[in-house]
Length: 124
Length: 124
DNA sequence: CGGGCGTTCTGCTGAGAGCAGCGGCCGACC
DNA sequence: GGTCGGCCGCTGCTCTCAGCAGAACGCCCG
Image (cartoon, rainbow over all chains, first blue to last red; front, side, top):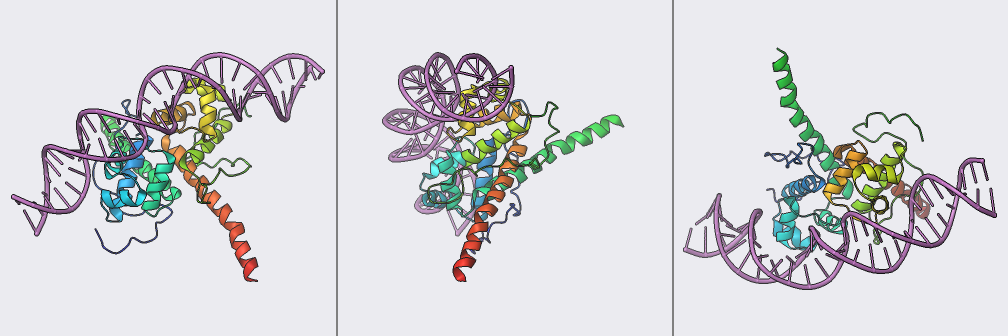
């Protein structure tokens, strides 16, 4: 990504979202779990800064392999760990949590979209 | 509290916030940790429903003592546990996360207020 | 082919999640 | 004053998993 440092993070994550599948839902088809949303947004924020796992992990004081597991929603980091990572990414907890909230709204709209269209089709 | 069931939760937590001190900051005076914000908002949402620890804990399938520890920011619940509690409170993850984000913004404004005034006083 | 990056695996240790039981504090109520 | 409901705090327990280290693999690119 860009070499220039990213602008100060907005209150809401206004950077373009990554393409790709949304994080996995729970087995009952309900909304995703916190650790999946957390990990996805952390990875997104890291990519916005144009950094590798190793770079961010070093500044956060954790292993790159563990950061990879967190971003993939495999492990559940402690609040202290979350604070270390957001510090390394130069964002605040409110930035992160807002990004998760916005992403959840987007994911929910995406899941509901085809369902609404399918319902209209059935009504026709 | 009111016997009538609470209205459908809004996308943002628009119910009046509890009076009282904001959650504890980290030792460096930075913003609070995720588990403190999480716990505070879960307790707020439970109070909005007019419920006791025992009532909500039973529906979530956890012990009331453990729910108390979560709400006080003493314990770090797993994502599955968070999902169980939000389910018991009849809110979604996006409701919870949005509530945390809004609360963080409020807390940050509160912390900055007196600091700005203090700075002006010093300049005088 | 080699390097960079990310993922996956095995194995480990120690912290802590989640619980049960109990006693205590406080405010409301009688 | 006593009782009750709600909550807190403590001890102690078991078992899961956080977080790590090291190694290996796959993919992509020059």
